[in-house]
Image (cartoon, rainbow, N blue to C red):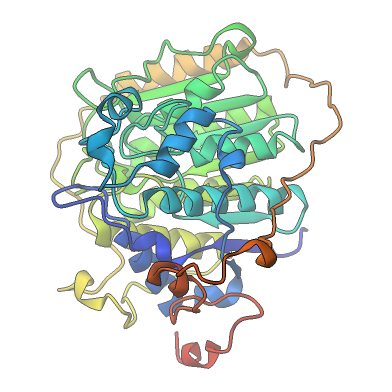
Length: 431
């Protein structure tokens, strides 16, 4: 019997303070709401909480092209009018707007996923959580679908330093195209994406017949679903496919992207999953007792995103949460019922039993084409990046530090880091 899992949880309050712009569906504020709910349920007492490092450009360029990273670092809302050609080349615009502190936002969420992978690699935790991550659409040289830096690819590359095989699972309503594309030609990463599929639904990829190429043939699995899929159908298909994948592929680590736009009632989604149904996928993957990196992803009805990821944090730490939401900084968002559970929507389930059984049958056929888990000639493990220290002697004492930078050095009231928990007495009354 294995001892209780050690959980590492990454959070930086600044990640929730950026603003994509009016009418944009992506609201990073949902991350502050999630964290507040996690604290109000007292879940922080059962995890180690870390503030992630901000990923350096050289780290981001392990996957992304250096010119793209440099442009993200340079562009601002005030200068973007000077760079029309570059904006078009890198796909920045309506879906992926340029906003204040955009690059720092990317550095934080990507740094957290990289840190999470490193802690798993060094055996410092069994499960690592970064709800700010999971931005699965970003490509090597361009932004896509509200995603600028693909933290998942960076985290998987980190895990591959120590693990021969990594399994990536995606339950966002949108296809995990950026991650699949990055590893389409290798058998060292198996990608499994459960998503809505259709020409008119973003990103329009993820057909059942897309299975990988060259060394990666049969190592990309796509589960294309129709509107209205419910808990029973989704969980049945998910469990049968994932259990077979794990049995055959024998991954050394798993990355689970928990996009919450697959929930009933999501602003951009069209599935009919309850929060418990969504969390059942997390519970199932956790049972394999394989090093696990869990991220967020999509989710555009922000109070439901916070409910979902809080419940899933409870699943990961082994705590059942009561349905009545405790008092927290965002209580008014959970009115009028103040409960974790949400009602199902009335979308008709267009996924017939025969359609789902056909998907399952074809997927199992392809898994049979894999004779055994691929062996890997392991080389010397490359070192983790050394984070350069700033040289105070080189800093100009006359240079004014802007207010945003000054604020970085102040501990926020909503952050509870290990060794930093002077405020923990405030949480003693949390149920």
